[in-house]
Image: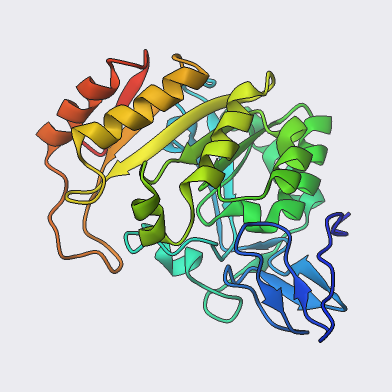
Length: 290
């Protein structure tokens, strides 16, 4: 089931371009992309981290964070390695910035994972959450597992940076029951800082917001001196409200980590002040890590 349906075209020198995200990595045979989860093999770019799990946990759904989707439930959360952004403040850098030789992993096929999810129903599990690293770099595994999960009446949850091309997103859309997308900031400059672009993420959020079968929530990690101005949070909230004023929006407190240790944790008062700014436009605002 892991055949890639959206295959990049080889160039004259034999390289092939990955079609999954806007980085469009052009790879020689055997070479990994920037995400370290995709690789050129046999003239196409494949999901090299397919079924390679580094993390597996039965989590409260509120930890995703999802505040308004089956509150009180548990969800089987899974992650692999790799990511197509390079956030200096990454809280999961040990796997998100890793490749196949950098971190222990165990191969678990979609059928096995769905069986695990099914067996945890009596503990309150309602489905599978694709999270921890960036799941969309391995969207084929999300697709194949999600299809089988739906056959068993389980839900699929996506926790993602939203930096993906429209075609893979459209293929997954019917399988995603709920998503939380990181809106890292709301300026092109901030997305330059993390190695992506704002317009792609806005397209992902707008697509999920318009999908009648997907519950959407959005999160911004508030970083002092980077994306914590009232103007930026107001602009983000106002844009989200233009899609749907009931979208739950999470503003989360930053703590120094990874390569961003030159500034203190976000003051709790600042998170609450910015939450009040966002409430001018959106009905459902949540604060995290406070």
